[in-house]
Amino acid sequence: MSHPLEPVEIQNHVFEPFIPKSEIKRAIHELADKINRDYQGKFVVVIGVLDGVIMVLAQLMKRLNVGVSMELVKLKSYDGFQSSGKVNMIFGLTSSLKGAEVLVVEDIIDSGLTLSHLLEELKKEKPASIEVVTLLLKKDSFKGQFPLKYVGIEIPNRFVVGFGMDFNGEGRQLPDIYALKEPENH
Ligand code: IMP
Ligand code: MG
Image 1 (cartoon, rainbow, N blue to C red):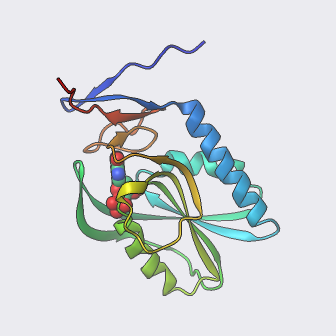
Image 2 (spheres, rainbow, N blue to C red; image 1 turned 135 degrees about the horizontal axis):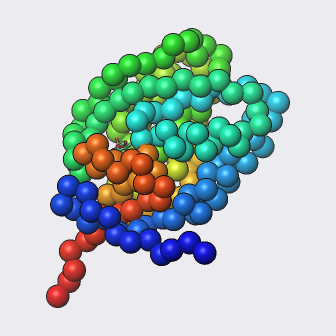
């Protein structure tokens, strides 16, 4: 029996248990199974968007039974709780994507701004196909024009930490996902 999760405090903000690891695991396995069916007999280039994706990527890749190579890119658009609106590619690809079946893997998609910039860059490389895989989607804040083929769990517009995702650099090591506690109504 596992103990019920307790809230955690990070930099004076309280985060309450939101998605337990069992549910995260189930969602990632479903994504992997779907990818395995869709890309059967093919080879995929998985592009993980650092830093938040590390845990999602590790769990997803272990479950894939198609040919896989991995690239990691690092972007940054967030400052604290808010998307800064600017996207910087900090470091990028090491091999050509020409003719490749590309899967861009994310931990969470909020506005979709980060990813729409990245997808535009990746399309210049002329891949055969490009699809997006994300563990979490904040459906109500998504403004992207691109299709989301592989979404694990849709969540309301709340700030989350854990399972690779951070608040100001902290909280990534948590095995479960927590959401910022909302003010109580009196
Ligand atoms: P977007 O450009 O608004 O879609 O933001 C995407 C990136 O911001 C994600 O890849 C995350 O790294 C980060 N992000 C968005 N929402 C959250 C959150 O609730 N917690 C932690 N990071 C987040
Ligand atoms: Mg991310």
